[in-house]
Image 1 (cartoon, rainbow, N blue to C red):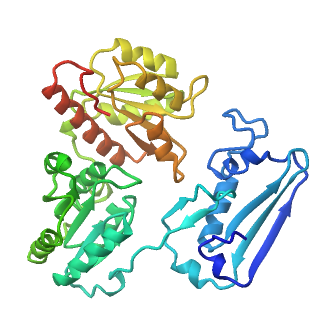
Image 2 (image 1 turned 180 degrees about the vertical axis):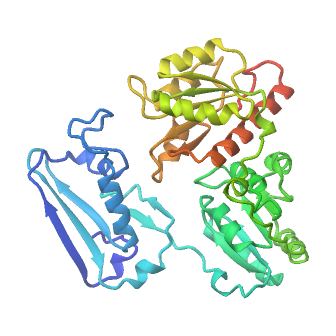
Image 3 (image 1 turned 135 degrees about the vertical axis):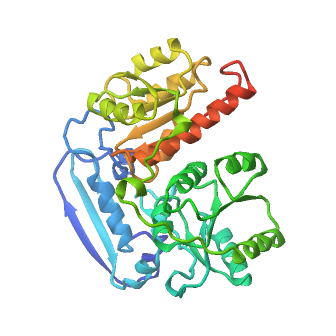
Length: 407
């Protein structure tokens, strides 16, 4: 196993399981690629050998959860050998956080494991506590200690995904939110929390840069602490939270009400383009959006979508499917960004690829944001509220479209 592996490096013994085949083999430069979701050794969209390209990605994640690693040794034309190493002692693996990132120096593509700070979730005892949404473990620890100094307990969420469900279940006294999360736009998470009937009454205090403060307050933040923030200012914030009466839980009114699917006046009158080769997806999304007084345009190919953006007036946002024939979503977004007249239009990538790193890949191709299939309608509406709000604010400040970049 790898000498640098965060769990196995401290082990004297491990279980080793190898599986060999006599297939086509894998070139050295492709051996890292095959561990990524929806990828195969040929690296093309149309796959000669079938399959989804998910098996090795899932296997690698299972290996990580067990505290182990998955390696490959292969030569073209000579087959491949995949080897799984699992530690005999499971304690280090259980202590590892689920937050991971790929180590760019690891040739086998094994993710490095980070460790989340310990918090008070197992010992809340009905006392007031703050939910700290922060993906920097060092800063999260500082915030937790300051909360303790103010007489509050704290629970840390190191990722935006799952935070709304956590808030519904745990009902914190207040939330501190870092807008610069790696897995979701912090403004979108704030919007979700403000529009969910079960979380809307819980104050959210944003810790962010000064340039983002006004927009956060517009969306519904209870307050903003500007970075860099002194310990005194943060202690003042937690003191304020400590003296805040806890919000009373709202009675549930069924699934529809809990989902927050009421009218969305922020979207009324907006124009949205859907670029997707599957007419079923276009139909289902159109049905949802038209219920909110949205004008929907659609295209079944990337080139057609670009043409509509160039000719149609005032398209507020475009939803771009990634897996399309002829010109995939990545290339479609790159071409849109290369055309000055339409480069500022917000683009939301819509894809079945929901693995770690896919969001960043979409952003690198020009997406403003990302949503995975099956589409979460509440998340989609939040994304659209945030991005259309930005577009409209920029139009008010700059009459000429394209004079400033919205995405």
